[in-house]
Amino acid sequence: MSWWDTDDDEDDEYDLDESDVRVRPNPKANRPRTKVRPEHADAVIGRVLGVDRGRYAVLVDADADDEHEVTATRARELRRNAIATGDAVDVVGDTTGDEGTLARIVRVRGRSTLLRRSADDTDRVERVIVANADQLLIVVAAADPEPRTRLVDRYLVAAYDAGIRPLLCVTKADLADPAPFLANFAGLDIPTFTSRRGAMPLGEIAAALVGHRTVLVGHSGVGKSTLVNALVPSADRATGHVNVVTGRGRHTSSSTVSLRVETGPGTALGGEPGRGWVIDTPGIRSFGLGHVDPDNILRSFTDLSEIAEGCPRGCTHLPDAPDCALDDAVAAGRLGDIGRARLDSLRRLLATFA
Image (cartoon, rainbow, N blue to C red; front, side):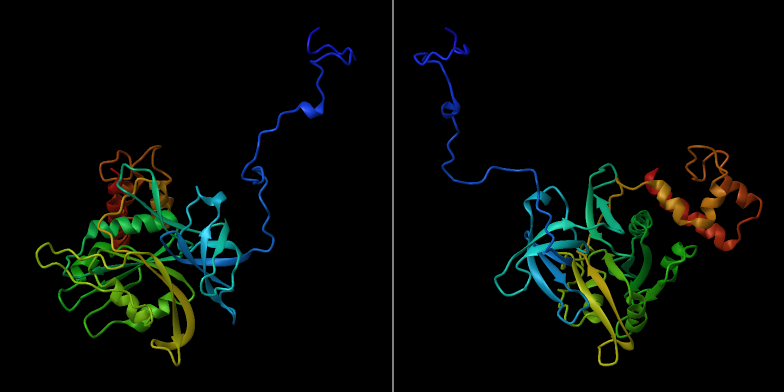
């Protein structure tokens, strides 16, 4: 008789019942895995201020009387998700912030902006610098080290691509006249600050930071950390010097961190009462743009993008582009001196992709 025979013969040794089901032993006595994730309805909202070796500093109850920092790790389900400084996150676990406690980040909330770079222009793998910033303060020295126009162009491209407003601060103006360098950006509507030894325009810069989340970028050795320490006296960011042989600065900031800027009576900056955030980043010597969509650059030049609507499909808008409507506008005198300067700036930025 076959084992599947349904005969009720009690002597049939192949008859099976539920007691014959073989169950895999579970020596660890752990629960079986499930794809159903908890909702974490008790999670609190925080803002990532920085990351250090897999531990995140998160500010919870921001702007409240009981705001405080907690140390958190990333939940297992987020192991494939990048968490950047500036991210708004949901945190569970011990969120008291007491010494020795550890919370857990279980969700990353939607981002309004994302500043990114790639290893080089051929690499489309993006590296997140900061999330949810709305301003980019580019710090460059007038000399020692020499200003690099092309690097600043790349910062501007990344800012326009991310939808972030750029600002420019030229340090060490006592060593060289910054005017020739600034002439490269005359056509762009970029707030500009110049700083020299003993005359740092802290009041003007601080006023531009109030109400914003501003990320600082710059070549190593340009004085970015010095500026951060002046804006936030408690920051204590390490400062360095420029190598007299190579002309390059030494990396001093090794991590990205958010710091609160406060103005008003009783603060180091004075002025009208206000708050903002500065996000200091490590100095970098290259800024890849492999992830950038060139169309985002043109859209940032609203006046020129309207004219470019008359260009043929696939137009690069560069000087050698055939039938470019921008060239027609120049020939017809529709662009004044400022318009031509803006066109030159736009084409220099677009040339980074050529």
